[in-house]
Amino acid sequence: MSWDRFQREAMSELGLVAFVPHVPGSEPPPPADPRVLAMLARALGISPDALADAGIVLPGIERLRDPAVKRALWPSLRGLRRPA
Image (cartoon, rainbow, N blue to C red; front, side, top):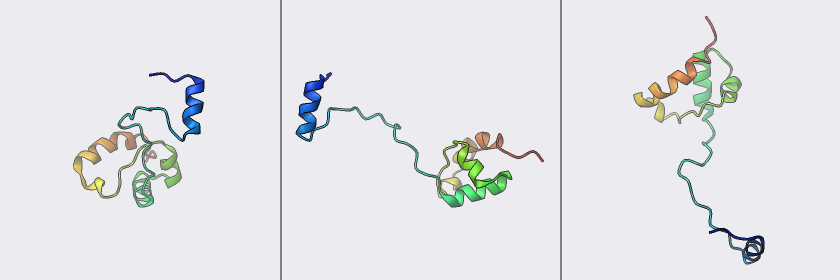
């Protein structure tokens, strides 16, 4: 249903919000754990700030024990490695 301007104004005066469908996965990712950032940055040979600015969604430290999570994360991290 689409609401016209008058209806939206009336609803906001009543403290109501027009229906907005929830799309799973549309929430922004949680901030990265600083410990995970530091460990991965050290392993890659880059600064933690460079890793944070890369835009890669990092899992929590407890999820890094899962081999599937590591396999999914590694290709995106490989491109950030400093040349030897």
